[in-house]
Image (tube, rainbow, N blue to C red; front, side):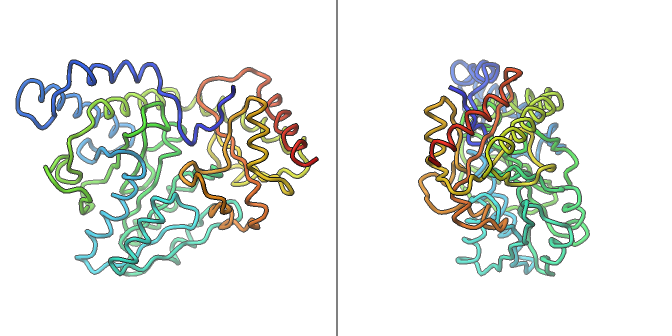
Length: 378
């Protein structure tokens, strides 16, 4: 079985499992406890925070551990926006292709706190221009929240250019880097806040982080014991924090070589699919895209039927974001890119892992895709 749904989740790396094991067994103390067992846990937590901050280009005190990417995005959007209310700021900027955790957070603020939300438009490939972002800003904009790389089509935004617009306007920029972490450099993005999630990197599900620069006011969503410098109460997941730091370090150490190798294989796969499947169309930006993501529509087919045929052939992929599982609605990402609803419903996403594939894998996989599409088109 060939697993090609790493954008949904990735297997836990053996090195990560070994690194976190002591904090599931012998070093089990509560990091808030003032005794030897608690201090050992607190020390591991501090070290994990420092390691993550180093990769993100931030300070250790900026890193807040969360239960995953969704919580990190919620904390960024709601926490920064609610803190900005004191300065009279009631406006948010997002884009229509964002992860549901950003879009639903913005909708919550609109419904319950009177915020106004502007969705900056994207082009046919899912890219946002600095000019479009600048036009979307107002004097009372509290936060801009955008994905560094899209989870469905893999399009990568020009973070530096968008960050320059945000800085010039004095607006806080949050980037959702859940998909780009481990594939792209995360330092010097020009962002004031960055979200990551462990299970996309080889850590277990249930751990993530939001790094927020110290100058940015942040209202906590979880209140209680005052952990994480009062920004996220609750006993910290020490083993998860160690796992996240280890997975991020491992990915960062090999990032350039792995991204180049996987990116080359993905490019060959895309070319072979487009050559072998007449109705195939690549979604997202052909050049500015994640190295491991290839997403297509197959007009005149059913995307779900293609997925079933692929699984019969030993290939596991997806029809888009796992967070929208169970929905038969066309992808909001593809609709925002101008793809008709009936075509959007034929989408299939392939996302590769970091382990090397056999040399002929891209072409063999493309042949299986062509077989699956022919089977459902007959």
